[in-house]
Length: 82
Image (cartoon, rainbow, N blue to C red; front, side, top):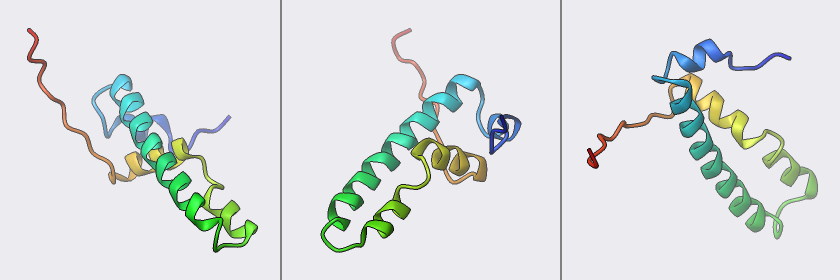
């Protein structure tokens, strides 16, 4: 199985595997919510083949590609409970 983008590239953009997982999952959820909103509106105006093109790439794949490209960033917030 080949994973693209490669894990080494992804880990070079974040400080840990945990951070990568958290950032990727949050971004994938944003993408998923956006796609569902667009798809719901598009049902009224687009052909079925055009709708399928909107959702052909999985949200997590898009999120990981954005992280690898540097399009997604995160900010580490200090824990104030200590």
